Image (cartoon, rainbow, N blue to C red):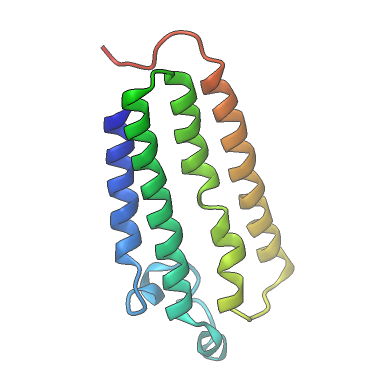
Length: 141
């Protein structure tokens, strides 16, 4: 479990490091399709800080899971934590980023936002339960 956690943590850390105040407009979805007046309302310095905080926190948690899984054997427990971290870890983005974008959007965009939020929550829950209750090994031989 150590190697997968470290690899995923590195990838997430790298992606988090790519999102800065200068790169955020090009990397974050939806900005290029916004009107000029809506673009003026978006605080990319704040959004970039939130993204980096969330991504770096997920990477740090994954490193901790990997290290702890090396010393304490319970493969299903650590795999379930890995699954929850990779799905539920992104949920704070839905709440913390809102204060940096005061624009109003059509109802369908809010509906898509809440659908993705619910999907991440339920996906993490079902995968974690499935992984935790799985009998056998996850090792590829």
